Image 1 (spheres, helix red, strand yellow):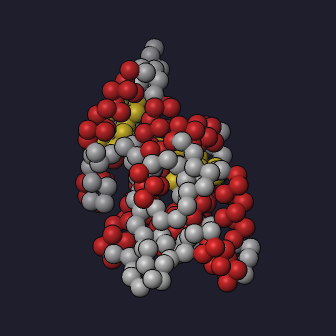
Image 2: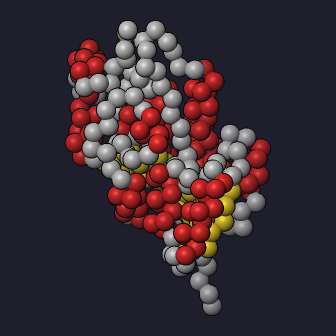
Length: 257
């Protein structure tokens, strides 16, 4: 009797981390359900994954469209064994006299926070009923302390961190794992567009290997690189005025010119 394929759903598969994870998991016996906005990039990624022996299905459904997203997930032939919610966006401000674009900030909160929350609620129900599965939430080291140049991004990543941490115990009681991913800078267009310096930047491939190792072990959290982990967590221990002065000193403030 043929063993069923392991179904792995990845949103944000056309981004740096999502695509690197797709290629990491691409192998015989794996069915990759890849979601992304850029169809040409998605098609090229699918070709590479199929060449490694994986079965691949694609979707470009608008994740912010609740009705379309729910219908897409309901239409899946089986409940995914692993769901990696890597879709995300960023927006920021470079001048203290200006504020973030309201519409961009609203879209960011949708993609970075509301969508993974609602996806996880829908999928976790079936996973609990089945008695196994795993949800992976992608946060950021910016969740430890808000960066002045990216306030909405920092807020969304802090919120998804708290949400994932809150889910782990109750879902774990029903056999469903939850892993929180908190990366530093990973080489990508989004990272390069962020204001401020990018210390200790990792390649997407290196990040994917570290993430997959933690996911496969059902670790509660994986964060990297170590120097930036220590620095960002250290900011939470300082008086707020000191933390803000350090952020300004190291180039994460906002220009007042």
